[in-house]
Amino acid sequence: MSPAPTSTVVLPLPGGPTVSARWLRDRCTCERCRAGTTHERLLDPDTVVAGGSAEVELDGDALRCRFDDGHVGIVPVDLLELDLARRDRPDPLRGRRCWNLDEPAPFAEFAGPSLDDPARMLELLDRLHLDGAVVVTGAGHDLDAVEAVAGRIGQVLPSNYGRTWEIDATVAPSSAVDSTRALAVHTDLPYRATPPGLQVLLVATTEVAGGASTFADGFALAERLRAEDPDGWALLTTVPFTYDYVRDGVRFHSAWPLIGLDPGGAYSMIRRAPDLVGVPLVDTDRADAVYDALRRWNALLDDPSSQVTRALASGELVIFDNHRLLHGRTGFELGAAGRRRLLGCYLEADEATNRRNVLRARLHGIDPIGVHS
Image 1 (cartoon, rainbow, N blue to C red):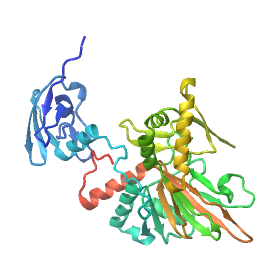
Image 2 (cartoon, one colour):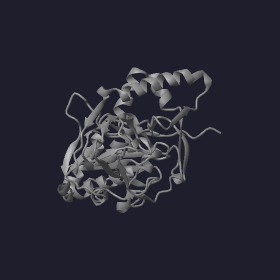
Image 3 (tube, rainbow, N blue to C red):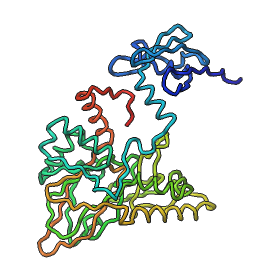
Image 4 (cartoon, one colour):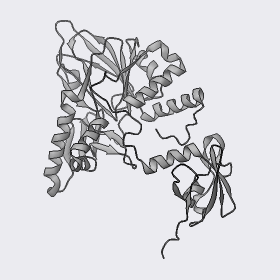
């Protein structure tokens, strides 16, 4: 039995976009179909008849739609245009701005005390979304300072390192992160199904020469790889690589593509930890092509011309997108009495998205319902 044909509707909007009448009925925001400010669904989409039709007219900032089942619906134009844009013109960067390394480093600075102002906090979150990283100056020198800044965004996310964590370099390190050697750019916790979306990192003490932070824009470099080697890009976005993390009381075993895409084809996550990544789970015929693509990808990430170096001072804090940006550091020496002590925590990416949407609605009347950025 073949499915019933779907009727289409030409909308009275610029360009005359065409949509399914059934889909348009499902998008109705009237009080019978959606619940007030929460936007919870009241309509059962299974009750919408396939192949239905609709008469549509523009009524101010909304479409008034009369469907063949007698329902008169309301569809806001701004939300409809957003959905159509996402359907017809997918944005692989989801509104992010690729780093242009010919311009000044993309690290907007915000004074810690200024973040008590909601407008200034919204500016920080806008820049964090756009550029992937911001710096907070005069933040403080202890974990209370880390939690105070993180708490303005949302709830701290515990991990296998605890609720907060400390990196205090030593001449007898137990791991690379506690050592004095340079670290290649990487993302944190790539072995987890969903690694933390944001990292909050405070330089509590720095009394060493060197040890500057390095950052690379993973989404921008993925776009460059796609332009230069589309076949290799396709492999690294689909072939899973194993990740195993084994410590006392901790066992993670997973496999994910190194360049993650969401269902709409936008970049969702970069996973990279050169000391932890295992092997690609790929058939023999494609193995050489995968390793060739991996070599090109690693060369892009590790190229100093792809990276921005920022020597953070004591009391400065950086917030950055762990799904997008890779971070590392230059080497340094402790000397006789030197110390390099960092404090940090993680947040879910959704915490920043939620806080940004709440502030946009409160300060500018922008309803976040349906805004996926």
